Length: 199
Image (cartoon, rainbow, N blue to C red; front, side, top):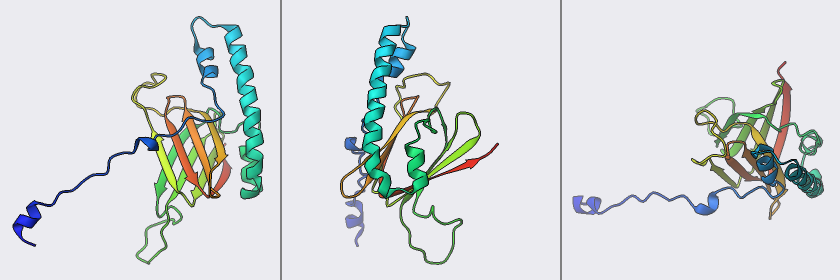
């Protein structure tokens, strides 16, 4: 390759795809949060929003049932728990990589596959929830500069809502919405949800 040929080479950086921004949750209506924090407080507005939230939650539980055969009994029970164990949980860690299934780096040749892991601390501070995703097909994250609330700096803040839904070709989608307005979405084939008491 001549010097002239080298000087004509260019490096193009792939630009973010706007379609990669997580889609809104299907079974969550932000009106409940807006009504709760409105000033002055409107009790009728809040009651209407709460009734709508109950309808959406019932629809979500119905849509979740067909996924039972694709999840372990423990994982499905946590997703379908009416007590919503992840509500108001804090995101401790969100990791992605090709070697998450291995405890440490190694010089031995390994089969690498993209995986995602998310760890949450429960609202009462007594339980760690670790969700591990395999067969990951897509991951999208949006941490908007204009947030719903000023959280004292750059914070993702507590989990406001999340939902597991079925996607095409045997895949699932787990979407998260945080109180700051940050959103995550993972499209995958397998997920496990494990809990660990820390107190």
